[in-house]
Image (cartoon, rainbow over all chains, first blue to last red; front, side, top):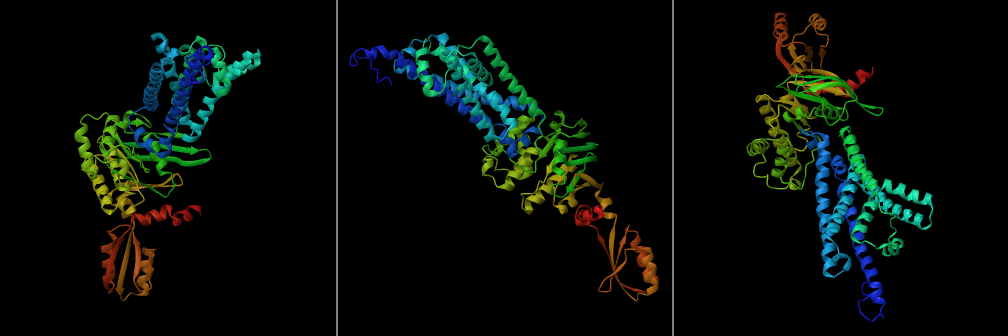
Length: 250
Length: 305
């Protein structure tokens, strides 16, 4: 894309005019693709974390040891969070390094505060996905859980887009539907907030990309939305512990 | 009692896996738990180990209520479908379990367990590369690791060759000598007969018999009698005394006695009537015959009638 808008006079000034727009789109694509990758990898990691051990019977040797079931769930979740966060950090820093090497202004102009906030939100995405996936893992078998989680994740992307369309057409019921979907699957909200911090003032690029990637976001998420996300994550972990603590391991 | 249950019941929907199970296992004994496939043995063991929650009823294991986590510090369990982390080496697996039970002298205990199950020198290989028998042995090592007071063995020899089976029998006997209680579920009745002090038979989720092994097997003695000069009168007298008396095709007699002490009296009686005694052979009842009577086809038909 950057080749179409080179920083030269060959394009009669068009390159200079559209290059910042292209840089924003490339940066957004990098974050969007990597975020989707990390979410899918997290789902793959988490969907069978407990379900596969239940299916194989491997769990029997562990749960007859002097450990509480909540410790087992939290131990699994802790290990998976560490693994997913390590991988997410590697991806996040790779984007920054590659962007800096190519001299992308969106990356070179980032402040430390932006990077820190963006990184924490980038980490929040797989952690939130894991909280739901771990509940699915004690409830469903590995494959159905993985499929359901991918569906929920994609639903979040669609929710953001529905909200955005609602704002374009100024229709409150469409906006409401989009918000409701975002409450069911708040992952896109986390991602879009991260994107707004890492690539600010890029609404035009976001709008151009929304149609192509079937994802988008409405207004920036409020602090209340993040409070909801915290309760959402905690709720699913609590449900997972509750469900697992009463589960027969047969 | 190291294990005590009162009306322990487990239902899965409409299906009753265990129904009103009452168990009383004394400490320091090897306790056999027998029954046909699907009788509810494994479900019962899983309730005792805290893996499955009873629908109703109660019980204690090592003096603690069922499912109590602290009781598991002194408990070992070898599952029927043993499956372990195949990416770990045998040593890693034992170290992992040693950490789970917070073992203090890890190295010594791991060495002891490996020696007991005959896997010394094999601990550096991955569990996934082990044969089925070796995997069962490493599972047994895991169960023995915390030096348990109570050990549940669910089909511990299902994947073992005859030498392996003997090794496990020896381990069970050694555990008993050390004062541990072994709760053994096995379909190999000769194995159970050789090592168990007490036994419980379970059928369709219900306990049909619980007894000490010696009482169970010494209760009835089948006696083969081969004599010359038997009269109708004496045969009639004997029939009144031993109603199970039968005349076999080869002319020999069989009778079921309640006590070994009846044998000398019977011999004296036959000789006093002038009979020539060729054979008087007592046959001890085997666990297999008792098993067949209680839960086999014979048992089924008698229970249905």
